[in-house]
Image 1 (cartoon, helix red, strand yellow):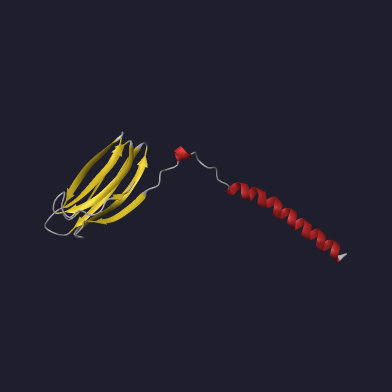
Image 2 (cartoon, helix red, strand yellow):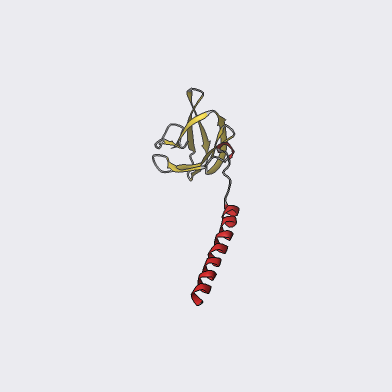
Length: 137
């Protein structure tokens, strides 16, 4: 008699557990959003130094609504200036520009249609003591 009661109790608890597990599992399942609705990842990059290590930059790059954004920070602690160069490929050709700063500086820029972005840091003038180039997007 005990064996029959134990078997019935066990069968009942297993059935109850299975019955409760299915709705609980369904409640925690998430629906995947389409790929176009998910935000693009933010790429952190740097510290990229000038060749004499007197200036460096670092930052973040991400894509949103067809534009590539770059938020960069520059640091240098001398009487001269630091220069950050950005070279990007867009609409079938390469484009290049730099920004000059003294002390600490941050800035954001964006362009549409960008496929690749490279950066490097110089110190003293736009073409002196330049560090190596790094792809950031």
